[in-house]
Length: 249
Image (cartoon, rainbow, N blue to C red; front, side, top):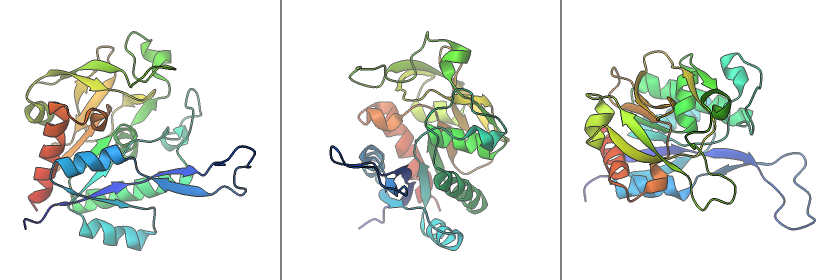
């Protein structure tokens, strides 16, 4: 049997809520890991072996990264503005501190090991912030509402909008074109890109939708949610290219 690349997926973290009417939320808070299945499905579809891993200590993290062929950084709540030197001004549900600290350590370990990375939504934002970038805390306040970037109340699914890719970029070559539709579920965006990250895709309103690092074996970050359109050709191409890079050790 051909060995499948071992693909790590970081976990989200949220405080557990009461599960029954009348029950109180845990006090003190009870942080709980979670990993949406849509991410693991896309890794599996592309021929990877999805391996979710929890928030752990530094030595254990290094051991985990050593065992992996690549990592998908999943989405999540808002990156705390304190991470890029700002006060809260539009941010809403903030990522829990334990996940913020762990994901920063994970990004540093992946940089050191030069393991392939596919960063999605909040993962895309975390990558830029880790490299000194900043975020727009609320898209409508800066870009208006001509383009919907997250689902409206009572809408059946995440909105789709067009994305324009830079011709000649690695991402355009992977996806086989420079214009296509994406699914969005976010209200924040990259304002000032991080060091060494080339901007390669934009929404019609100017929101940065994707970046890549030409000096890394494979490091692509996307603001949209490819895993929400599992059957789309662009999703298959993106995860397929990522898994192929993870095979090339």
